[in-house]
Length: 108
Image (tube, rainbow, N blue to C red; front, top):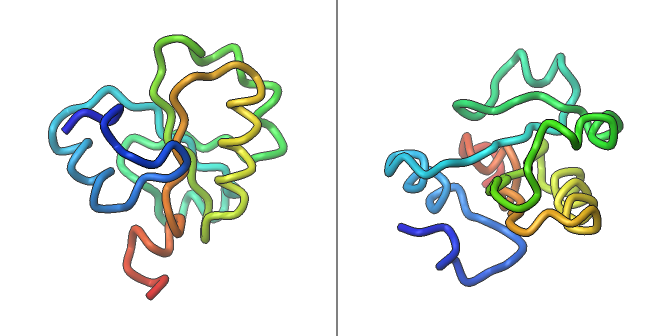
């Protein structure tokens, strides 16, 4: 699976993300929830950058090369992070559809 072949330019489903991780795709996964939520559980390899701190940490990522996945608990803050990154010139950003709840199956 090549992530660039995902039809939506906005979201990635948990199934698509699990497949990408399994296939060893090079990803930057950003959890924009609060540290307390991150400690309870998070996606494999995710870095915790609360949404309010994202602007201060942009230099850690390459807008031309990094394929970024954003997520929160239910999808809204993750989508705000996605839109912000796109506005800052990042080319490849998707938000995890339904957030962490959907990843763990709690959002159903």
